[in-house]
Image 1 (cartoon, rainbow, N blue to C red):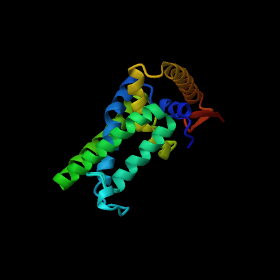
Image 2 (cartoon, rainbow, N blue to C red):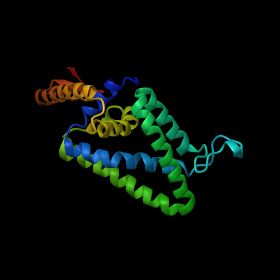
Image 3 (spheres, one colour):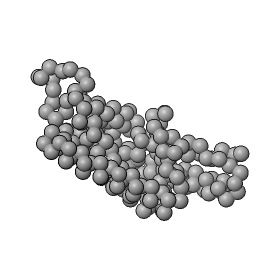
Image 4 (cartoon, helix red, strand yellow):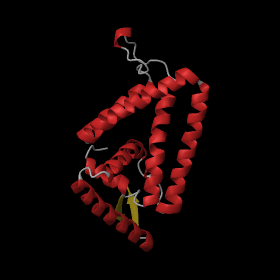
Length: 199
């Protein structure tokens, strides 16, 4: 997977263009990511650290390490947007650790329910509104990594961030969608990695 921001957003955008489906993802994807971090906070510290180096509610468990990896990769893709998102991910992970430490299995049960609901809502969004299978069916790793950043960029675009990039993406996504629809109607093409290849 390349860290080319425009290429990655084009891949994901080609599967998420319908406004209702995008709205469902804007609501559900953050909950999916944060509940996944919460599940990771149940693990013990994976790296032994002296107490003076340990940050409260951010021990080096699976949740914290995953949040650091996501944040770091997002900063590499887009330093400004990633730089704003990374601390939010760490703060959410610290709060998740607080929840699992304070409420134990109750926090996990609620997180499991929210997680399942959000997955179901996204599949409904794709089936009923987008009319296209989710991106994860073409590239699982890319979809899991991109979904939260795509949502973050959609929010930033809404507030006017990088209008030139937004305009280029909208045009490129529209072309990809038209190619997909034409290939679907003609039945003579296949779709791989968000791009249409002639058969």
